[in-house]
Image 1 (cartoon, rainbow, N blue to C red):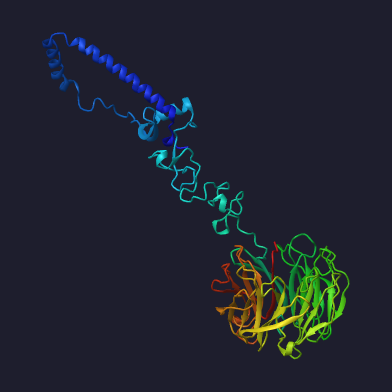
Image 2: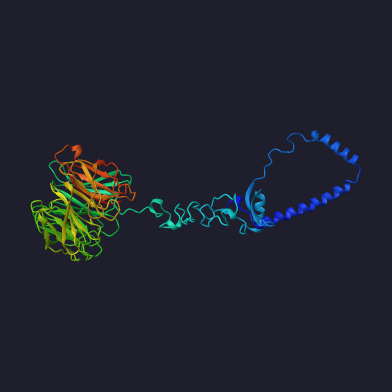
Length: 539
């Protein structure tokens, strides 16, 4: 408490006693003067004359002010005059205030502080230049002197307790006084490379430094066929691991952390037809708390149930509803607590197959629809597009308009209007601005380097797209947080197979601002013909 603000009624009492003593002394002095006045005026005048003549000589300039002697520091205090009962501001020394506090404490009435916002809490830094009938109160605990709704800040984060969502935990004003959210998104990346003559298939881990920069660890696979990657926790240690599915059927897993490199170990084999094993999907499909893997194939699909220690049970198969299946996603479409999978087949058949999970690792094969040929053979996603709490399906691929299939809640879906004039690949369907409704990112088609971000309007439609320039030939994308700021970023792999090498091997990074907008995308070195990407925390 600033000593310049302290004085009390008892100080007034001490002051009044001093005044009384001074008056008594003055009266006595006057009486003695009256007696002396009876003496000879000549003698008095003579003495005074002598003193007057000496005064100029004896009072040398500056002698009365000794060098280095400190001045008395005086402060304004609010004082109650006991005789009149009126508050007034008086100027006294800090030593007097300190003596008053030592003798009487500072809790007595008469110590007052400014209360500019009128909330009854004195301003912590308020000046005592007025009195209580002019807006002063007897405490000084208001840390927010201009806000009548706030006076305390228990966690010291600058956000008043009444408006602090986390009043006992220091946080950020922009987060309502709560600590910055810990991102659940991975900041490291893993990519899988398609095969071509003269270029070895490989899996590459990109270790992020939480600043948007990466260091690569690569493991080649001696084949010209492609490999697709996904992440999960296969041994239950809370650390992200990697699975890699080879187009010819081998299924590999690498158990993290990967600080010293990556080692893929084969844990299964897809009994593939036509060597077309494709895109693994990770999830707990039998509800035992362990991550499992579903792998697409040409005419059947494979399930590998995880044991929770990095190993897997034997392959089980369930029929596909079409051939040449290209894209898969998983989620609980019917709200029964079991994960389902949705699979897009080739453009020739344009068939959407929904396989409902039984919660034991099995899947139905009786729900398919062509929706009048509105489907495509490329990326399919589950996301809550219309913000009604259940998952919808959105799909978009080569030479057709991206489209939402609205979940009716009874294992039926209704095609919604096409999403603008979108041709090409649907790269991502995720909530990019935190409003609870999924937004989308598309590529207009061909080898364009344009990425169009379309924010959801909250009713299942999309606003005018915002274009960003990435790299030619984007093929697959993932939500990530490469700079660890708690805001969703996007990473994309590009594969312009027949184009210039310099434009065909980049990974594009889009740093999110948290509101659905992005900083200017930048490209980091990748590998030619990367076709798949996922994110995790690998160290």
